[in-house]
Image (cartoon, rainbow, N blue to C red; front, side, top):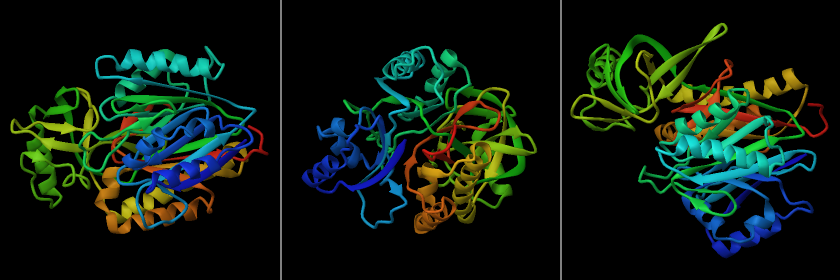
Length: 396
């Protein structure tokens, strides 16, 4: 198996199509996973050479731009991992979907992807997904109802630059704005992964007593915004008025603590808007009876955590499979990126150093999907993940 990284400039469409043609391999890639600006994904969808490069695509729009091990200054790039694996099996399926049909659409697409991989009824080694914001939990629910939690599911929600809904995905055939793409992977090399956040747990917590979908209504039977702003005050943060709070809440999100052996992991929810009734709109769901903890972060925690997550995934590949890394995907929340614009190069440098300069691609996403050590696939916000693909000459 070969995993080939490409980083293409999409500023000029004609030049971009020429670059795509140059990527064609003696064997068509089984799968290409890609990130790029909304312009990059749109340009990819309009270039008919895309199907010559890869049998299937999971191309996801990233906030502002994609990133990779190649440092560049300009915007509008397409970062691609091209999987050429004649001894493996891969299948891609997609759906235009909505909140009412997402669970059934998810199950149908998973069955279709397995059929495309010539593996109907089998469990893949890994599932990669790209949902549009708002459909993530339903997508994971559909997968869980069909095959349980036996397969790790990782991915990143499509993003745009200003939360205006211009995000998009491309599956090799069609451009999707509201829906998802799913890829099942039966690779001939091992895969390791790690899913985490760059925030610290505080001692402040409360129980969810009122919630509707992603609207957090009450905590400990008090208006959620009152409790949240009280926590902010105790941590010397100014209270947030009614209205959009996405940027202001980035360093003070809410977390659900998941015990993991000797440590606790936090699955984060990012407050997006405070309503005049005192409820809070989140970018992920919470449930009645769950304990919510006030989390805190800063620039250094985010910079260091991206490198640490990459390092842990790399070490696991060696420890579990005695394999050397060949390539990687790194997911970094767009909210985290927007909070530390002057330090994002340090994030890239830290990842590059810990991955020992292997090729990698990454996207800035509006939601992150992954699993902790308890084996349950989850959707969170402000999360970081690293997925490492092992070397071709190692045993699985």
